[in-house]
Each structure stands twice: as C-alpha cells, then as structure tokens.
Image (tube, rainbow, N blue to C red):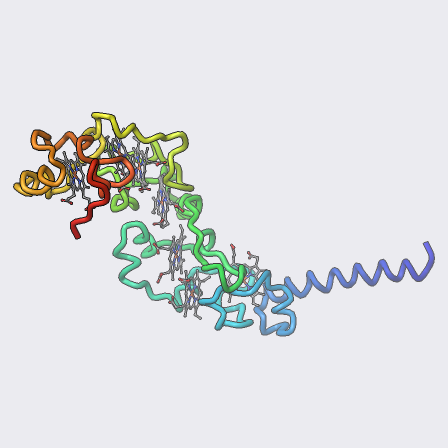
Length: 231
Ligand code: HEC
Ligand code: HEC
Ligand code: HEC
Ligand code: HEC
Ligand code: HEC
Ligand code: HEC
Ligand code: HEC
C-alpha cells in the first residue's frame, strides 16, 4: 500500500471514530457536552408538538438510559380525558413511553403509534407474569356487537385492525339479523307501531325481523324508502 492511501484509510477510520464518539458523548452526557453535534446525530426533525424543544435533546433523553418516562411525565400531567377513557386509562401507571410514542419523523407525523406489544413488554419487565392481553378491559366501549359476541374479542380480532379477514357480511336477504343485531330502544316502544311500521308499510313485521325494513350497508338505509334519518 502506498503511503498517501494508507494515510487516507487511517484518517477515515479516525473520522468514523469521531462520529461514533460524538454520539456516545451526547448519549452519555447530554447535548450540552457537544452542542454543535446535537443536530447531526438527531435521527430526524421532531414532531410539531415537540418542535419547540429545538435541540434540547436532554428534555427526553437521559444520559446512558435513552428515553426515560420520568422526563416525559415532567411536562405531561395526565389530562382527565386520557385517564377516563378505558382505552387509554393505562397511562395512569405505565412506566414506559417508548414503543407507542415515536419521534424524529418530522412535523407531519404525530408522535403516537399504538403498539400492543409494548403493553406486554412493560408487564413482563415489571415482574408480573407475561399477560395475555385482556382486550375487553380496554376496548369494552368500542364493542360494536352490543355484547352479542362476548368478551373474548381476540377469538376473532387481532390488534392491527378491527377488520376480520375473509369476513363477508350475511346477505340482505338473510333472516338471521336478530342473531347479531339488537334493535335500538325506539323499536321496543309505541314508537315501533307509530313510526317504523308506518314509514315502511310493514304492518305485520315483528321487531326481530330487521330484514323486512333494513339494508346491510347502514341502518339508515330503509328498504323501499331509502336514506332515512330522524335526527
Ligand atoms: C420530545 C422528546 C425528544 C426530544 C426533544 C429528542 N428526542 Fe430523540 N427520541 C425520542 C424518542 C421518543 C425516541 C424513540 C423513537 C422511536 O422509538 O421511534 C428517540 C430516538 C432517538 C435516537 C435513536 C436511538 C434511540 O434511543 O432510539 C437518537 C439517536 C436520538 N433520539 C437523538 C436525539 C437527539 C440528538 C436529540 C436532540 C437534537 C433528540 N433525540 C431529541 C424523543 C426525543
Ligand atoms: C418540555 C416539555 C415536554 C417534554 C419533555 C415532552 N413533551 Fe410531549 N408535549 C409537550 C407539549 C407542550 C405538547 C403540545 C401540547 C399538548 O398536547 O399537551 C406535547 C404533546 C405531546 C403529545 C400529543 C401530540 C399530538 O400530536 O397530539 C404526545 C403523545 C406527547 N407529547 C408525548 C410525549 C412523550 C412520550 C415524551 C417523552 C419522550 C414527551 N411528550 C416529552 C411538552 C413536552
Ligand atoms: C402501549 C402504548 C402506549 C404507551 C406505553 C404510552 N402511551 Fe401515551 N398514548 C398512547 C395512545 C394510543 C394515545 C392516543 C390515545 C387516544 O387519543 O385515544 C396516547 C396518548 C398520549 C398523550 C396525548 C394526550 C392528548 O392530550 O391527546 C400523551 C401526552 C401521552 N400519551 C404520553 C405518554 C407518556 C408520557 C407515556 C409514558 C409515561 C406514554 N404516553 C405511554 C399509547 C401509549
Ligand atoms: C391496556 C389497554 C389495551 C389492551 C389490553 C388492548 N388494547 Fe387494543 N388498543 C389500545 C389503544 C390505546 C389503542 C389505540 C387507540 C384506539 O384505537 O382507540 C388500541 C387500538 C386497537 C385496534 C385498532 C388498531 C387501528 O389502528 O385501527 C385494534 C384492532 C385493537 N386495539 C385490538 C385489540 C385486541 C384484539 C386486544 C386483545 C388481544 C387489545 N386490543 C388489547 C389499548 C389496548
Ligand atoms: C365472534 C367473532 C367476534 C368477536 C368475539 C368480536 N368481534 Fe368485533 N367484529 C367481528 C366481525 C366479523 C366484524 C366485522 C369485520 C369486518 O367488517 O371486516 C367485527 C367488527 C368490529 C369492529 C369494527 C366495526 C366497524 O364498524 O368498523 C369493532 C370496533 C369491533 N369488532 C370490536 C370488538 C370488540 C371490542 C370485541 C370484544 C369485546 C369484539 N369486537 C368481539 C367479529 C367479532
Ligand atoms: C353473523 C352475524 C350477523 C348477521 C346474521 C347480520 N349481521 Fe349485520 N353486521 C354484523 C357485523 C359483525 C357487522 C360489523 C360490525 C358492526 O358495525 O356492527 C355488521 C354490520 C351491519 C351494518 C352496518 C352497521 C353500521 O353501523 O355501520 C348493518 C346496517 C347491518 N349489519 C345490518 C344487518 C341486517 C339488516 C342483517 C339481516 C339481513 C344483518 N345485518 C345480519 C354481523 C351480522
Ligand atoms: C317495521 C320495520 C323495522 C323493523 C322490523 C326494524 N326496524 Fe330499525 N328502523 C326502522 C325505521 C323506519 C327506522 C328509521 C326511523 C327511526 O330511526 O326510528 C329504523 C331505525 C333503526 C336504527 C337507528 C338508525 C339511526 O342511527 O338512527 C337502528 C340501529 C335500527 N333501526 C336497527 C334495527 C334492528 C337491529 C332491527 C332488528 C332487530 C330493526 N331495526 C328492525 C324500521 C324497522
């Protein structure tokens, strides 16, 4: 190897060490230790909500520990709305923010990306037995099935999307509607005689015969009448 190129190799190795060193220093001591390097090792711009923090990396990152929940919680006193909603009430005693709260993806990406696996990781780390996620404990208010399908949501649902692969809704000619849908309270009183039957002309219909009056795309789509919204 000729001398100049050997020197070049040495210099680039030194250069690489300098970059790694800067990252380690920032990580170890906070951005104040190497102010000019902070933007260089930041993976990307902060979300709009956090852009005001500028290059104050230590607002969220702790030396040698990475993202620490206590740092986030300094600024985030829990809003009652968050804790009073079953699906997000777990915030009251979750010890970790990573996993579901992303960052550095720029102003247009809100720093929220739900990851159910993070729930299991936290449970495992806090010493408890690895939990099977109790879907219903968080999602009870989002049960679209009026209780018909029970509490074991995971029998039919995964956590990525509520869509069920290969589910095809029964035909609008099905007579089984009542097995999966409950009538609203209005259908159980005099209203049913005076309104539902009158609007549809289905004088002999019983309440559970939804198919005589309803389509399957929306309960506001009344057979032979079209879109109907009382409100
Ligand atoms: C508002 C809080 C916040 C601020 C301020 C912030 N970060 Fe981050 N940073 C995060 C979060 C959260 C993650 C984890 C992202 C993920 O998991 O998608 C992260 C991830 C990183 C990573 C990837 C390594 C790791 O631990 O995941 C680096 C490197 C990093 N940040 C550097 C910086 C630097 C340098 C600055 C300052 C210029 C900075 N960050 C400012 C919240 C912040
Ligand atoms: C220096 C204070 C401060 C720190 C530290 C901080 N935040 Fe924030 N955060 C804010 C402010 C201010 C807002 C915008 C107003 C609001 O929504 O409360 C915000 C907004 C948010 C939002 C809502 C964003 C949206 O688009 O709705 C989330 C989620 C969030 N922060 C999570 C975190 C997490 C996780 C951490 C730690 C990694 C963190 N924050 C650290 C001050 C802070
Ligand atoms: C298991 C995933 C998960 C973990 C862990 C988690 N969050 Fe959240 N967080 C969410 C989701 C999802 C939302 C959006 C909830 C909604 O609006 O229904 C949210 C919402 C928020 C909000 C926004 C509230 C608002 O005003 O809209 C803040 C702030 C927040 N989280 C902070 C934190 C902090 C701080 C931690 C760590 C102590 C943390 N979260 C841990 C998933 C998580
Ligand atoms: C500790 C609370 C908690 C548990 C337990 C839980 N989830 Fe979630 N889940 C959330 C939060 C928070 C969100 C995000 C906010 C939302 O979609 O309302 C979410 C979102 C979802 C979504 C919507 C995803 C999307 O982007 O549309 C599905 C599907 C889901 N969960 C299914 C499940 C299933 C199935 C289980 C049981 C295996 C389960 N969840 C257990 C809190 C939980
Ligand atoms: C017996 C199977 C089964 C069980 C158990 C079940 N679901 Fe479903 N769920 C379905 C089917 C099928 C769909 C329609 C999916 C589609 O259109 O791809 C659905 C759709 C949904 C939707 C989306 C509805 C919409 O309008 O987009 C939500 C939300 C939902 N279920 C929540 C729950 C919750 C919460 C539980 C547990 C308390 C649960 N489900 C239990 C079968 C089930
Ligand atoms: C095997 C169970 C089952 C049967 C039988 C059934 N449905 Fe459904 N239906 C579902 C599920 C699951 C969904 C999607 C979740 C939801 O939004 O309720 C749904 C959704 C709907 C919707 C859309 C609701 C909305 O708010 O977007 C309408 C309307 C509907 N069904 C009408 C009917 C009618 C009318 C019949 C009879 C002709 C019928 N269904 C039979 C399970 C069933
Ligand atoms: C005799 C005809 C008839 C029968 C049978 C019937 N409905 Fe209806 N339903 C109507 C009419 C008409 C409306 C619109 C007027 C109203 O909202 O009261 C309606 C409204 C509704 C709405 C409210 C739509 C909204 O969002 O405002 C729901 C949900 C509904 N029906 C579900 C059912 C279910 C489930 C069944 C079967 C268990 C059923 N209906 C049986 C005629 C009927």
